[in-house]
Length: 440
Ligand code: NAD
Image (tube, rainbow, N blue to C red; front, side):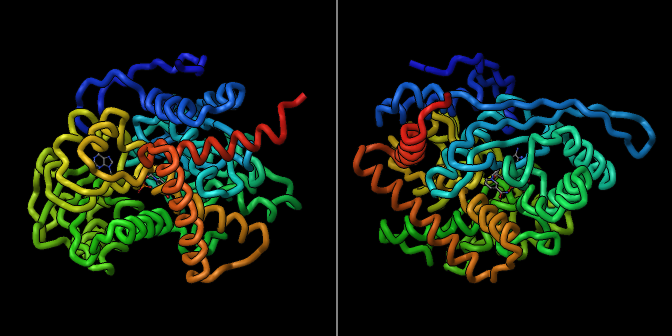
């Protein structure tokens, strides 16, 4: 029985990647995963009501002047799911498919993520519904600044802290920081450095933040390999999405001896059974607008051929709903390490489980990004700059302790790792609500 009372039943018109009709929204999937875990761990009914809905939802429509002098009006979102454990925290996405339903789902996942790895943040997410490739650099700057202005005090260094997500990057964070600081009285400005994380290093960013999500994915693949006595030095892997998360995961697996054999991004899929050098592919994509299309040292393959590739590890690092009832039966792999948020829907999950394919679930597997964002925020608060070795070492400890907690709960409750990850998060949040009670 669902306790979520809001009408979240909006039907997503099509799957962005396959064009197929789809009846369930991403948020419906979040609710179904949440309810499953809440039933198993017998979550307190009151806490269930609180966590089953979002706290605040802000939608802003704001005008921006284009390079040719015309005006466009954009729609931006910020959803704050929960802040029982600390300030709201979560990325900003620039994509045509951003809508309130997707942002609710992404915000909710952020709450679970911080709770699993035990950092003092809550969950939020936001974005603008637009295709950034259609706008010039200076238009993107004005869009970002005006969005920040429209959000006003919805964000803040001790209240809600955005970070990069799909199609946003350190440059966009620098514009947000500068705009936010400009809206503050002069004596408050230095205190505001932590209003966003994932900033350029010179503007208060942390070393290691750029690669943090991919680094976390690779740390966890290593833990999984240790537990399964699996030799990564002879393993093969495939990556969907070759942006921040996908390219860093691919590059950081390479030194372990594993071989990248297929890559897919928005421009299409490529494969080479003899191996693709991820560092070389990064150089190529940098020169080609970020896209893998046309890479001369691999052959072009179809989406279906990509999914059917025989490999040991699949790292989805693009968008939601990629592993579904239709695509899960095609996969020829041993492990899914979810770099993306929500790449597997509940039907896909059930099929993976039935087929004995292990899953490192998103809310654990891609938490490296928010962990190092937390380190960046701490450095900003203390006016410190940590060395890369210190950042990596602390990231390793945090993410592996999360892995251990999820593993223990999976064994205790005899559930798959996704449900176990939810249970770990819900247990922590339930404890906090029980200790503090509800005001008044
Ligand atoms: P990004 O914008 O850097 O890269 C996105 C990649 O996905 C690009 O290579 C793009 O071509 C590809 N892509 C887009 N549409 C696609 C399609 N239809 N088919 C195949 N590939 C497609 O974004 P990112 O920051 O790497 O984020 C990727 C995923 O990881 C998202 O789900 C995001 O929420 C999640 N994530 C990101 C971070 C982070 O620190 N950036 C942290 C945690 C989770």
